[in-house]
Length: 553
Image (cartoon, rainbow, N blue to C red; front, side, top):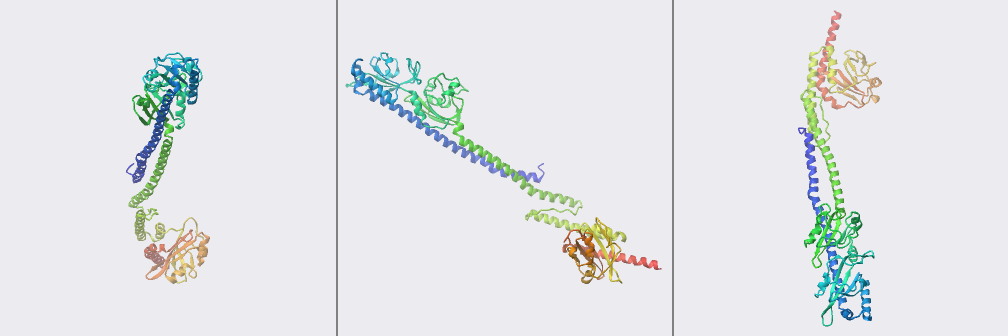
């Protein structure tokens, strides 16, 4: 198959045309892909950084609230007030105001022994908090943020019901008197739902979310997809403290959660499975002060939606261009190879003796010049063969067969529908037809053996001028014979005089059904056979004379 020049050219053009596409796919596209990927991750990283700063700032405000409220003069002396006294009631009113204004779930005042002396939740008054970390750290003089843990006493949940095990976060501050002695602890119970809602205000697409995890890999805020998680059977009521952030296919911590547990900041631009089993892009930050990880994620399909769309369009363009280039390669390969193959085939036939071969190449380039040279060579060889055959026929054939054989040979170089050889009558002002041959019809008037007058005839003009005569259209021809031949369907004519010893002894005549078929281009080949044809005509004349003399004797 690869011995064919056409296949070779098509393959070569195809390979060269595909080179830019390969470069586009494996050099340009990765650069564009990397740039888009970097932009997406930069945006996601910006959101993640903003969210981690927000969480730190939000918790700092809670700590400031606790410290500021603990330094209030009335709060500083809470341990001195009796529950029935007016100052105690004023403290409760103040605590309720702060709770409702700043969105806390509860505010507690705890004495040095760990007993709740006052608070917005009356059911907790009298309960000891000595075992809780927020009391233990604050009584040492620290403003402290507790670990998120399930409540060991019934508190109001996000649905307004009292429940054990509700995720609870306390921010505590020591309460000091005028002498700066610690007299107790003020504890703010933070609403984690409020924190979740505040974090969601930073939009991250349709599927993006930011959530917090603790050092054990448990989610401590509410997931955006809590309903989906509930339907999957991964939680009972809420994601906080119920959902361990693991890859459901492996049972291990997700890529982001693992990074947070290790105390690392980072991102993943390639994508990993989140707790839903959905591939996401993620950015994470570890907040060592609180022991929390801030994770921002968005579904990979949405995060890279523009990039995926670009990829589809890019591949579509490459496939379309590849198809177009393939067709162009095939067209160009055939355009170049077909003339070469045609010349090659014609050359083989020419070498086998078929000199009628011609190639058609219309281009003006080297191929066109090669085709023109081939056609010139073939024409020359055909003419030489024709002359050789013509001379052989005249030399070897009987005179009665000469003109029939000659007409068959002439047909190869000069097409005709009618051919005749006329001879000038020596005594009469006339000429007669020595030989006539028609193709596809029978001549009714100008037949072999008929005699006609010279005046007003083509033969008469040739005798007068000694030159060939061409009639482009017999319908407008000036000779009386034109009208006769027109009735037979002949539209154009050519007459070529035959000279013998300086005199015109006759002519060879051609007729065609095509108008304007004969031109001066036919003169050259006829000029090369006319002398031999004139000799044959003269010999025929002599033979007829000899026959007449024998009859007379």
